[in-house]
Image (tube, rainbow, N blue to C red; front, side, top):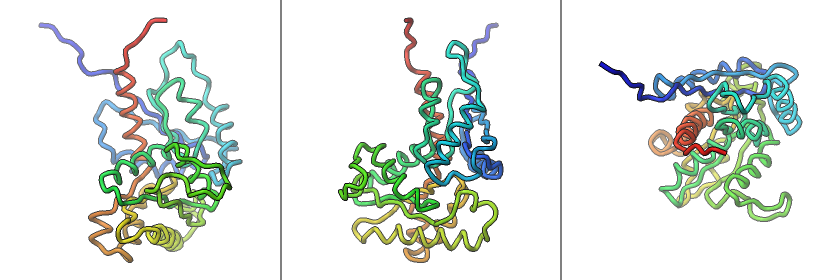
Length: 274
């Protein structure tokens, strides 16, 4: 009697929170556990230590968090097997950490993954639009330019040209909150009100013939707040649209699915000897 191992080795994914808020990382766990990846996929989380900010709110915070993580996580020896097969950077931004890990393992940002998911969900209905609800004002321009970079539709910043991102991108609306506000420090009623207002402003950018039928939650701290989005949509568009038509994209969920597929694809590549 002989036995042969057929299934590949376990897949190990690191969900990397580059800010120093452990509560935010903990808030990602229900979303992580909601993704059906099978028993061979291991998912580990990491929270950056101080002095990484507890909430990444602007360009300086992005750079600080990058420096802290690069110092805290040791360099990998390319000759040695990596600790993880893929890294998901759980910050909804154009984050430099993706470029740091990409030469070593599969790497993606929840922002990039969410944009690609939204594009695929609205592709079938060519007239429909998608947009992003996010935190502070800084992110409106940052994410709009990031979408343009991902889609290859960018224009020079401040040129006054058409909003980049393609005709199906409805834009970014901010709540005025910080990422950390979604889990502590702010009255949940205030959080709900701010999300509802931003969501309805985004919906207003659509028309009867060109609806905003997909909303991306533009912050890792918004994980688990899908119902808040749908409830806000229900107020203006009705229950049938809010629960039967609208797509709400969680970047963490989209990122885990994408990074898992990227790892699978990388294992299909032929190995060449150099």
